[in-house]
Length: 130
Image (tube, rainbow, N blue to C red; front, side, top):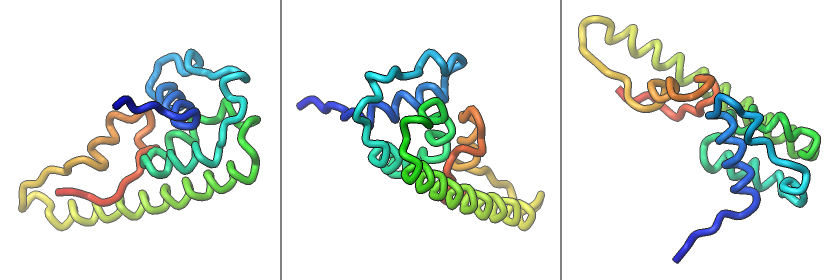
């Protein structure tokens, strides 16, 4: 059984592809490709896939197509994620201070995976795995 992406999932993947490209403009969708896009569904999918921050940032070329009410909700959710990220980072700092040089440790996933993002602040963090 083949799985087919819907239009909104394709738009989100396009936005994410642009975020990873050295030439993001090469991924810009045209007006016909954007016609009828359900931007609320795009925003919800970005939240569901934990890519809200990066997708909102790279959706800027499409701002004129995104209804203001949806953009504001998407942006507000992104701000909440950024705030949660700050708390996770603070917890990580506190844990590394507690462990110091006395105990060997390695940080897994989360903030260490941020190194692969074009902007490490655009990755949603859930917790810190030591």
